[in-house]
Length: 190
Image (cartoon, rainbow, N blue to C red; front, top):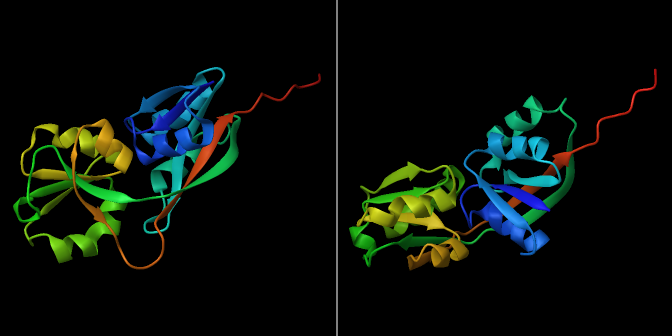
């Protein structure tokens, strides 16, 4: 089976898909949620995994928009997955927290990490939204004073150095994902 997922390798969506389906399938990354949803409709024998809700950020509007856009295209939500999210601050080059100038991540991990960033990093750190957490890991490859907030698996996959785990008080950091596929078109009797 072909499994499409949002983000580059080891985005949280990729991790949720791997956890549910294992490594015996073929996985295909997609840069946008819309492309991920459309892949389930356009590629035979494939499914797509997309994030739908996070305990910190709430419902993910881009996913809702993509699902509504294709609701008449025989789209089927076949499962809901849940993943506990652990966030890590990582860099490509050795760096002290006091030297961090810019942090990349998806908007939801940035929002989740705001208090931690204010507490442990200098006040003039620039926060930059990336398409996904794994895209953030990719963006910092050549920037010496930049970091990314990513998964532990992305940290290892991209050869990054862990500066700190970002632990935040309060409700657990969970993300829910939909597994979607194309339903068979109904047979009409004339």
